[in-house]
Image (cartoon, rainbow, N blue to C red):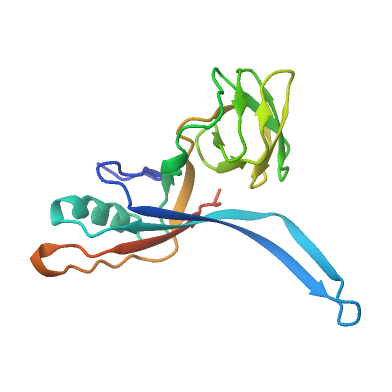
Length: 199
């Protein structure tokens, strides 16, 4: 069967740890006379980065991961992934929620659903292409606004919001290497990935 991207992240044995970082392009110039800084944030130049760590595994457990990451062909392919510790929202949100917002905006308007989204909850839209984090608590109802990071990559118009199992699309930054130790134990490995912002 032909491989199509993005591929779904494997679930037979999860990573031992995932480090998620926010990356944004910000320029700063400090006056040598007054020491007053000038800061410029490039609109929309934001993405998630991740280091995905695996503890040592036996061959039967490791080989599906080896094949999965090999199939990426370095940064050519892509895969969907979320925060395993944040798959469920901390808030009480339920029901169907839709979102509307402008490209490069950090603010979206929500409609539908009940309950709350709490700061730190993960959300995504439509086809789970991009992953966003809620910045402030939101109580659904009366068309509340919601602050998110990163800003929207594309405009939303009543797009379905995913709040349980939210995922984004990621790509490798390099081709991973595997070290096989005594007794065919695949040694600890860290995979580096960035949010895939390609069209």
